Image (cartoon, rainbow, N blue to C red; front, side, top):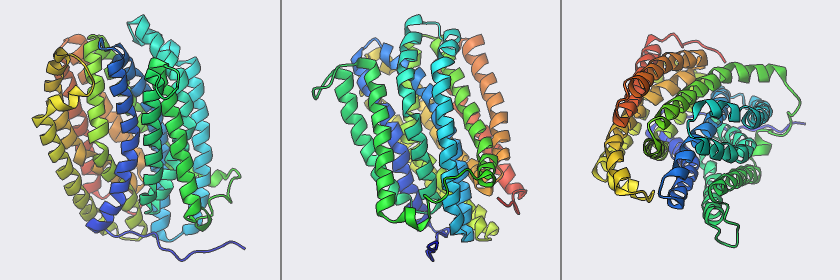
Length: 453
């Protein structure tokens, strides 16, 4: 006889509920960024010519392309889990989770095959430097084996955030961070009795960190009784109905995130044509987005889950009020971060161990990027509100229109007109203003009301 539970997973739109969900999410998002930045700090000290740092920029964005595919599946599943939690249909959550896990493993297998057999061909056409190209290929063929661990970890995140239990994400986060930093230092430079692998040591340490984070979260969920409560291990047979539902919700988000990061790969390829210093500087700018944008992305993920949950409760009229509360919190944090970055830009750049010319060239770019962080802080909240309504095809349409503007801008500015790196990074303003305008107009139109998922 199946066990039942009377526990409620419904949320309110109070500031307290928003912060209780967002803060643990921010920590869980921070971990991959800490891992990436730790890799880059160590690699920056590996050679001052910036060769390793340049290669890390290309490989980091490439891996991010597959990571965000899992993120698309994660957000689609999260919206479904949140909707069922709001509706009180707890028995459906375990079914959705198990099918999402099977889909994620299939996606990971596809990512590994693509990287081994197609990535060398793609990079051979896009990167001018033969040394950089081969270094990137060798790294990626190791790094991609972390994908199954990452995807399963993301499915666990969708479950915990969707059921308003994001506080348990912290345990996996801490395990992943510790393993990555220790092994990064050990394998890149040959400390703690480990071999000095150099650049590829960062790949092995990241894989181990993702596996550790996944394993710890599994243990925590089991020990807290969540697995039993939500019947997570009773639905492993292929369920065509739920697989179809997850794919209908997630596939537009997967395509959305994929074309978004593909455009960033395009941007980095154009930057590589401007020289190694430009590529290395751009890699540090990606670090800024990753590190200082974690709070914004946490509020965005919270928006997705809470909007879906309160719609499931029949409170569609409260959606706009919820969005405004989240935006106030998100934008306030980003404004503070932007001010600090503009006052102490050299302090952040100094950790990469590069020469003064690198720092001098990077500071004007930081000023552009810090402003873009503010634009992102409210734009991404509106976009994730669209996700929470269940109309993920609208997300894809918004992204497609935005990417057209973005790619045209970067191509003209960087490739045709050969303008400065600062002008190239102004593309982030183009991107986020386009995202905001379309998302805001859609939510305001009310066309999402009555959507059933």
